[in-house]
Length: 232
Ligand SMILES: [Ca+2]
Ligand SMILES: [Ca+2]
Image 1 (cartoon, rainbow, N blue to C red):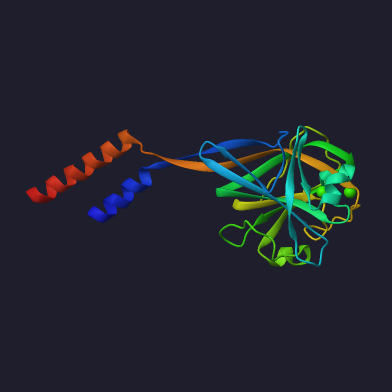
Image 2: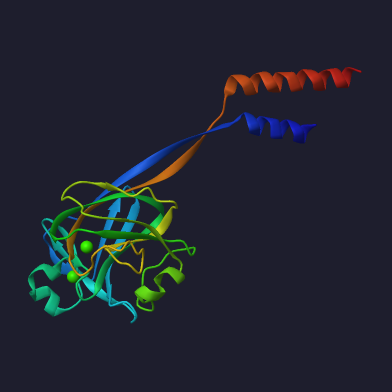
């Protein structure tokens, strides 16, 4: 009886879901670094750059911070060769690995600058846990290493958030210049040059919402029944 009552009380407690959202600003002009760390309301994001030709293992690249967004630079040649200081797919496929300290939904992103074409691929790590190093992975083995495509987006406009509609939440996300190894859309490659200027993430919070009046009435009923039983 007591156990059944507890279960019934639990059923009367509601759960109210709400979403906390975060906007990560990748516009700054601090130069370039091995990684970029940010914190919003206790959530941390660590961003690293990765580049690879396709069949060889990727190498970590620098993140370049510019006033119109951040780019991925995998060599001094790239640093010094104009448009390649962006996140591009000319020569090598560049991408940013964003690792959060909790599972989030990557809901949208924006670019602040592009040259020529502006096509992007997005993936989420669905292998459990998180990933902060892609050095043992090639783009060719990417989808068999726990990563799942979350869509490709073409002809992006500057300073406009593009929705992603992800199918999962994850601690690790990847966003890169259009990459057919992530999702083959048949689009042109070698001509996409972009700087990533912003990310929007969210996570859901659930709060227990007891319904006091209903529970009080229910407990009163139980007490009355128990009293009757004793009196029999
Ligand atoms: Ca680059
Ligand atoms: Ca393209």
